[in-house]
Amino acid sequence: MSKVVLYIATSLDGFVAGENDDISWLFQFNDVDYGYDAFFSRIGAIVEGRRAYDLEIKHGWEHAHPVSTFVLSHSQPERKPLRSDIVFTDDDIADVLRRAKQVSDKDVWIEGGANVAQQFIKRRMVDEIVLSIAPVLLGRGISLFGDAGEQLNLSLGEVRRFDKGLVQLCYDFQSR
Image (cartoon, rainbow, N blue to C red; front, side, top):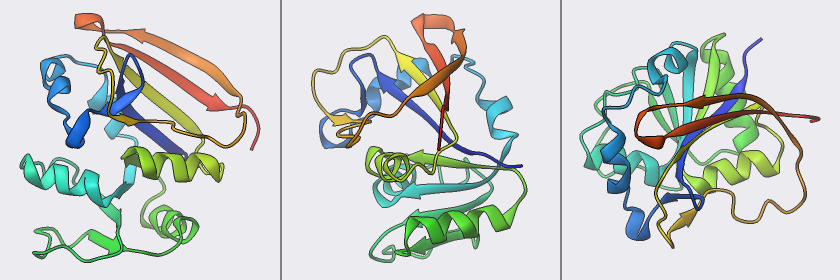
């Protein structure tokens, strides 16, 4: 059975981006093999927010994830996406997740950003969190978890250590 996986990177102090959606602090880790290819081989669909999509366009990453992608947005993009499997939707996230699961029997990646991750976590619609932590302190920016609203217990699965001090923590939700 497919899983819903939040796979995301943060700074050591818990930010997914600096001020003004700055992710340049992550670029120093571009040459680190942190298991992305193995992870992505499990993915059949992606759900992401509009700001994450816009960052991908800004950096020329439109074709980086060649699977069906559902972009949560209240508006359509200024230009038509280059891929026909990119869908902009303002449907409820439960409906979007159902549609994403219908595309493939593989896992669904909740790609980002923080607001999207928080929505799925608050509604307990995530099975697994794979958190890559960069040894960088940003001091301010966009917090990954923000206000979870309540205590949520996780079970630590794997801990992986990579070059340049990057670590990856893999958690499962204890109860749903």
